[in-house]
Image 1 (cartoon, rainbow, N blue to C red):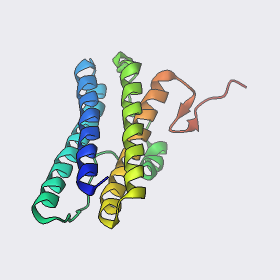
Image 2 (cartoon, helix red, strand yellow; image 1 turned 90 degrees about the vertical axis):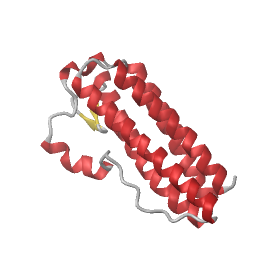
Image 3 (cartoon, one colour; image 1 turned 180 degrees about the vertical axis):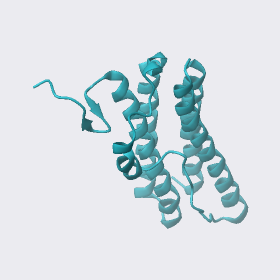
Length: 167
């Protein structure tokens, strides 16, 4: 796969995920859910914009000049540091969000992360630099969505920490 084809495919993945988050945001009836899905959707739109800019740059000059891509979603390390300080990012009323939306989002995030891992492994230096940052961000999205799903599902885990034990 050429770098141009990889960027075009990445745009398709990002559009798919953005649309899932926009759909979920529209279906949510509480402010906490709207904020969470809105933030994730906005982050994905930023990825689309960045990739479209990068594709235009590649088309115009034959090269890309990756700049640091930022994310509104904190890293797993940052979340772990703040975990002790916060009760929950989710309101008790968050249950209005359909679990299938979270599952759908998680599946799409994992598929996208897998694609970025493949591109990191298979593309040259420019591609590794570009897609490596996307891989990091998408893995943070996976963590955020998994957190929401675990919280709603009452699995007893919160960001991989066991909340309670029946023994």
